[in-house]
Image (cartoon, rainbow, N blue to C red):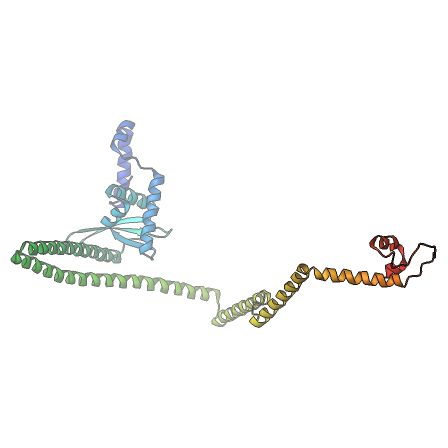
Length: 333
């Protein structure tokens, strides 16, 4: 892997030198000297780092310090390998500046495009981010010292040494004042970083507006035509909504209508249950049928007056009714 912390020309010379040295070395010595890195795992780790940076940056690129980049990768060696891979893909670039001390950072492209060249704004942003991290570290140190002074003051009070407890209390008060000053500086740095982010977003929006205006000019599209297209689109949307409303089932029924229908259903179900559960209804119907049959038999004139034939009433039992079932009078009854 090519050293990512050097320039392009240095990286090219490093590749040539590495190839020349490897041609004279045995495979065993190469395995003992170098670290083996799986390209698939390296690519997955690089994608994970870019995804993590994208969650806290919404621009197409971002600048982070080298320490933060290596901590996100999992260590110095891992950061070296990931940055080497990103540099080979033109998705990451190393940058450094000297402002009383060496400040190192990484510019990473968060989109599919290659990373753009390093500008003066990138160096200024790196300096601000480095200052922000230093101030945050200083705040953490102040908080730890304040907690230690507090514990010491409590221990001194328990032991009865009020003089020592008073000294620790003074240290706590001094730490509180230093924390307020450091926190004020940190807030200012964060405000400047927010202004830079807003300027970049405004620049992107302005660029998009300029592109849109250029496209309208190239296509010779007037404002009236655009307005007409928007109106036609609104009419189409309204028509579609009306069609959907007409096809949808009507659910706006009155509660009284629903209750009335429900009462009718209850009455029908109740009457049906009464007929099924009342056996006297069947008995009365059968008695009426038998009475009509008896009346028909009283008026019946038998053609055969043979002795012993008897009257129709005497032979109107159930078996006799079955025997006389072929009589048309019975069928009429």
